[in-house]
Length: 112
Length: 112
Image 1 (cartoon, rainbow over the protein chains, first blue to last red):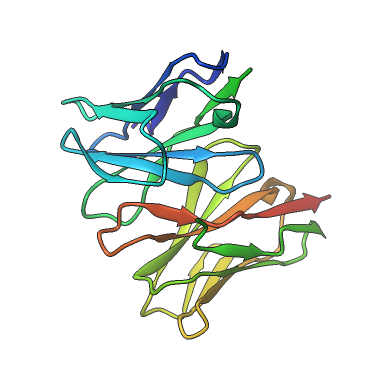
Image 2: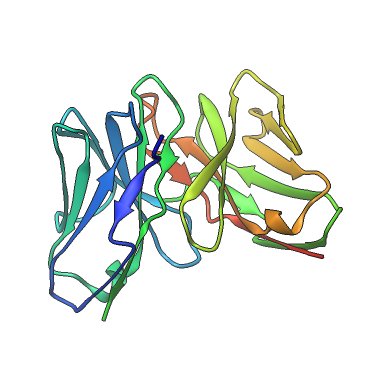
């Protein structure tokens, strides 16, 4: 049973560019959440998707957007990249009835 | 904003010793969770303790929860080099149980 998968593993972009990160949830999970983790910090909640809708959003600007597909996979898009967007981006999946979120290995984004 | 704050920020011990990490949080909770993160990769769920529980065990892990003090502790007994990682406590931002809020974590180093 595959866990949560994310692609790519690493990504290098320059300021002003746009990036798309991808996440496939654990089998049987239909809810996907995205987190940003800066170096030396704990993960910060970006948003959560359920039934292809954004269910809740954290304190992130509109440059951060997402999408969930009918197969429950999800994308995180970041426009007009800033140096401060450099971080590990984590995807987590869960079932609506469960309190436990299962995390993927993350995508390391570096903005130069 | 951070909901939980772990203490200490860093902890270095020898193999075989016990490691204790503490977490304080700000608002009322339904449950509190502890996660482990190895070398900036994905988070692994360790244990969940509900607000009506005071203590919970899982293998070499022991978690306590004091809702009157809004604090929790994680004890790892007989530490091993493989326990070297960052440990985070996390609570849900709201009753809907969508956004997990993490502290900054405790970095544990176990030397042989």
